[in-house]
Image 1 (cartoon, one colour):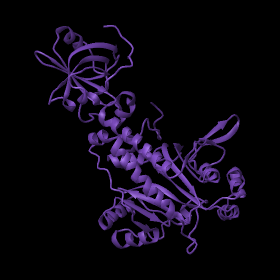
Image 2 (image 1 turned 90 degrees about the vertical axis):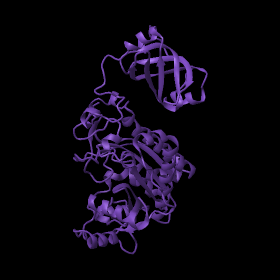
Image 3 (image 1 turned 60 degrees about the horizontal axis):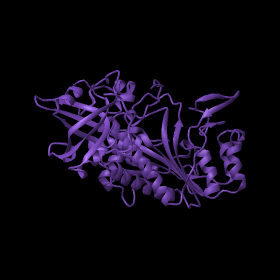
Image 4 (image 1 turned 180 degrees about the horizontal axis):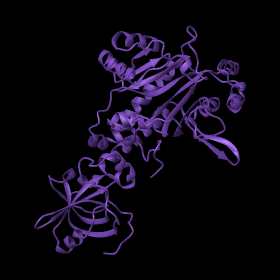
Length: 440
């Protein structure tokens, strides 16, 4: 039959259970065909799920037999109750219109319950492999997570902002940045929106942003990317970093609730166990964490300025045993490991008013209180042997009065990977960019 455009009237697969006995028109991809002696079963896939179509008419069976999987179809028929069909309803007495047919087959059968291919094949052919329900599901979960992030912060009086991704200086020292030519001047891809979101505290008091950030770190691991999506927030007029931690807890609860509500089917496909976000997330100071690790593990990390991945896993397991929480705040990281804009602890200035949030064995969020006085920034840069000149535009905001403030950043892909149990962060990333990959 000739190709046609998709009309406005349409029934989604997920809507079929409420339409038994009515004529319906579906549009989607031919997911799978099963032929029996007297009839054919076609499974149609659309954005809402799968629909079973039963074909008995000889002419329609002849048409269906010529259709390759991933053909785009319009199917009109009768919604009929059937216990064996998805949702308990199938489409009978169908008539087909072929909208388009593929010129090449996918690298593997998309109807298989599992993914019968390795990561390179999945990534190399992402435009089509992402159609597989198991490969699509993490991105539905990520979308729901961002919706929950936005809704929570909107409810707390935050304003969404969108800041430049090309900057004239590095956000965090001068390392690990992608340099580029900006009409003859040196420029860099932004490592984070940190400077901009702090500046905007002076305008809106509470701001957030979702967008890409870029790290030229030469890591080739299952947990690192050169480009990822950062969910950032910054708020003013705080007493200390614990007010930021309270917002983090509310954000996590909102994101989890949104995933449950908006991506329940995707969670079911992957058997996702959503976490319980406690009313108060347990916390441990960095110094105390090092003492625990020295006492209960084979290594003595005391004197180190950061936690190793194995230490993060041990502390997460400890929090689960001691508090029944899959989340743990580690506070007070050494100032030597934190950016120059971090506020020190007044009583112990070698430690910072900062935190990491561990989730299921991995650092997920970094945040804390920032400096807010102009002279403190000058002293902090001088102590590190850095000139204030490259940061002139950033420091200008602090010359005009800024409140005590703080914020945090959450990596969307890490969050999604931990939720879904992905063993490689690339399975939670649309078209990942890393040391070896710039396409597709």
